[in-house]
Amino acid sequence: MTRDPYEVLGVAKTASADDIKKAYRKLVKQLHPDLHPGDKKAADRFKDVSSAYEIVGDPEKRKKFDKGEIDASGAERPDQRFYREYANRGGAKQYQSNRGFADFGDFSDIFSDLFGAAGAAGATPMRGRNVHYKLEVDFLTAAKGGQQRITLPDGKQLGVNIPEGVTDGQTLRLKGLGHPGRGDAPAGDAMIEIHVRPHPTFERKGDDVVSELAVAIDEAVLGAKVEAPTVSGRVMITVPKGASSGQTLRLKGKGIKAKSGAHGDHLIRLKIVMPKAIDEELEKFMTGWRERHAYNPRQE
Amino acid sequence: MTISEQDLIVEVRELSVQRLHKWIRLGWVRPERREGAAFFHDVDVARVRLLNELEHTLEFDDDTVPLVLSLLDQIHGLRNELRCLTLAIEEQPAAIRERIRNAYARIADE
Image (tube, rainbow over all chains, first blue to last red):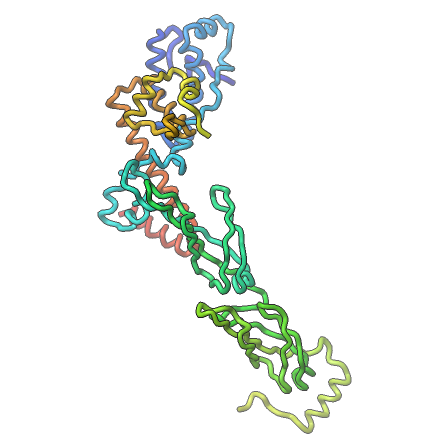
């Protein structure tokens, strides 16, 4: 339903063209979306007001409307893009002013730190602000290094080189990929904070990697050569004869590359796992064995 | 996307070259300059529409327009900084957000 344009503008049907214009102007001041950034209601009402004025503000159209030749519909203006829709975005930086913050510097340095580089047109050249991103990488990429893509807020994609051995919480700096500088000043940097996803098997302790390896009782008793995963692939390791749960084997240099260039170690913690079912033969053997060799591992 | 000065004059009703040049001279509109010609981005076009509305419809005079414009630029600057600050807080872990919220409530109450 389109409302009566006279009603929308709050004027009588007999109002003079001048009165209509005055009424319209008053409503524009109250409702113009650009004079009330962020006010959604004002924008909707402004649309009605401009449609109404479109008809009764034009002497020809008003005459036709009064005679009933046209109705109030069809006079809506195509959706206008108001200034406020652009003004908050990066593209409007040249017009934005942060003079409204100037006195904040008196009680907090954070304002000059944060807002120093923004706004204020025509000022001295100033280095662009850094932009900050978070990037989640999986455990193995962090351990071995690799490439990972990041999508920036503006939709651009960026290939980030993940250096070998990057740690959780470390920040990578990509020079010149931040906000552009003002004047001749260089652009800021992109600061990428790395978050390493935990791995189901490996755990990182400094430059060492720790993992647990299940061994069967016969392997523990007799010793064995078994395969174990490390961050650089599977390796054969020797489970010593008589190994216990919790015993740790150190694989030198199979850990993560340290800042010094040397590699940390891979620590394998053994865990003895019983067979799924204790068969008669094992039970019988153990019963006999206990009579002659019982020991108490809880002592000492 | 940018448009030329001629296209802009066609696009915005009741805009004259004289008034557009005046706004550019006063720095109210700052188009991109390439090889001596002016090119208007979307934001410039919207700003020209706004200036047109202020001068033509609202009949603000030459003293009032810059005042309104300056207040609007400050509001948009502040809104943008507030938006950035909000997003920066949003990125923080829940515990830090909670602390900021508490500190904010306390300071706002003082």
